[in-house]
Length: 152
Image (cartoon, rainbow, N blue to C red; front, side):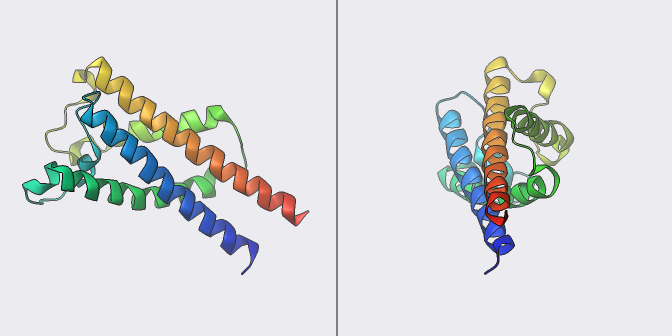
């Protein structure tokens, strides 16, 4: 296998595990009542039975977010892989939070708008997205720099 294929596999693994780890942390925050929205929120746009709001729904949401995170990792790879900066990761996380909680708000029925979120909910979700963004950013930039270093 060539280096680009190996790199793409690493990006997919980073994306999957980034989604898995931080969705699980998000579920823990939801379980501890730091936020009103757990991983099952990803299932809200689809007309599924009430099980989507149970433990099983959160597990399916974690798996779905892990797969979606692979797509997010490849988008990051295409646009920003060359720069290794904590600020870029923080900005990427805040951008993703803005997309999910502001731009995609109409897709999530029953979710309160940003203006009516309490401080705990707001700060927890932003922090989760920031940590996720830094994880994806640093991991992909590290793998990119390693690939470049091995080519030289």
